[in-house]
Amino acid sequence: MITKILPPTKNREINYDNKGSCKRLVNYFEHEGKELDQEAYYFSQEEDGLSKEEVVQQIDGNVKGLKREDTKFVSLVISPSSEELSHIKDNSEKLKEYTRQVMDNYARHFKLKNGKELEGKDLVWYGIVHKTRKYHWNDKGVRDGDVRRGDQKSGIQTHVHIVVSTRDKEQKVSLNPKTSRARFNIIEFQRSSAELFQKQFKYEKQTHYHKDKPLRERTHIDQIRYFEKRINQLAEKYDLNETTVTNLRNKALETGYSKEFYQAMKEYTKRLNRGEGRKDELPEFENLRKADRQETRVFARNQVNQPIRTKSISFAVESVLKGANVNKDDDREILKDLSNRRRGSLGI
Image 1 (cartoon, rainbow, N blue to C red):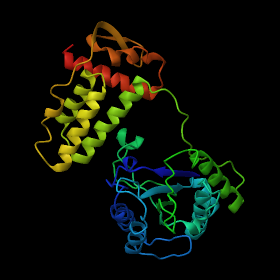
Image 2 (image 1 turned 30 degrees about the vertical axis):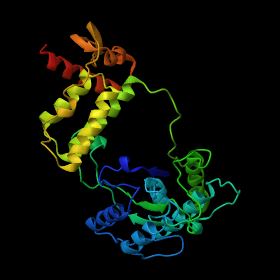
Image 3 (image 1 turned 30 degrees about the horizontal axis):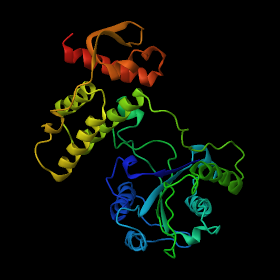
Image 4 (image 1 turned 180 degrees about the vertical axis):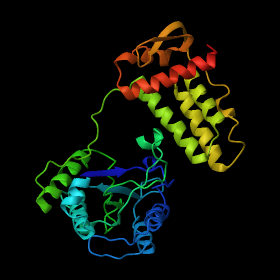
């Protein structure tokens, strides 16, 4: 049983800001359902058959006491496994009742100063059941070329999308699960939500739950992964051509995936949002400081463990790539790609 809180940056199919109106998110939920010939009605703790207009009105109107820059709502998803869905015979009504229990659980996990314990009825939230899923840009099958983005996934794929206000129904208390673990322990919430399913439906098998990874020191490979992902997101969102994407990746490599490159990415994104200039021109990246270079470094090994050498490589990247032979397979693929890219840019 996977229960996640999704920040806007995680949602690759819709660009929305949870510091404003929830209209774009709600429209997306409805569009996704109608596109797959599903009913597009919402339900809440006590009601069913609600329209998107009612949802938007209630969420957007429940903001008294919040500042302009405060988060106004959050998006959750409840995703049972295929075995769990089979256990309840893929019954949407049972899944709705379970969702109401989860939102009771969500409310109870907020620790308030006065010691008061909330319930689902104290929240302003709405859910919608989707029966199918589509492949997204970052799914393994799409990356491997086995399926196309937008293709429908096989098997039982029923899940629930939820939008919930960060103010209680009386608009007296802020309820943002992302502010502090002391105020809202997300791992405990996810664990207990999984146990709720077992208890409510007498499901005897072990049910797995999504949980945050423990905090650890950020490494160079994390930095590389992050920028590779950001460049891919920009390419998809703004339909960048292959040459522009290659130039961005080369700039990232030249600068050693630096903070300055990150700031340039932010300025470039803002310009694209405003619709100014040409997408293939990159003035934001022209004067970035290049990373120090080290001569003749072994910085990656391919899958048959043959060393690859280059004449020059940024030190920040080299420091992690030289240990590629002990990384996981997915890291090895990233490093191999960077190796080939670097060699190509140097003409060797």
